[in-house]
Length: 62
Image (cartoon, rainbow, N blue to C red; front, top):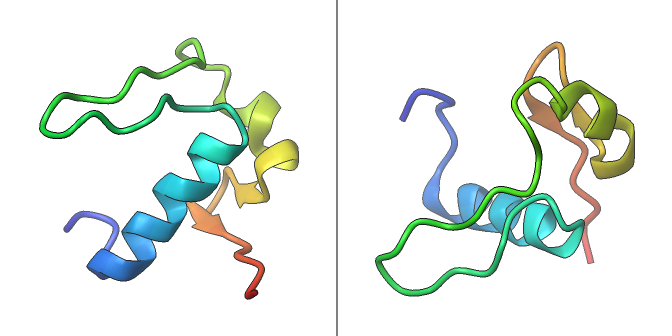
């Protein structure tokens, strides 16, 4: 809700973050493991395609 993205786009962002190794796989209702230390997100921004300044992702369409 805070980022004002729909369910489909949020699911796609989670898939991308999982693919890039930023978060762990989904396990039902359990929270995902996060593999990035606090403050390390800016370092990964270039690798994931996420703009750290705007919280927007450059999503490649299939």
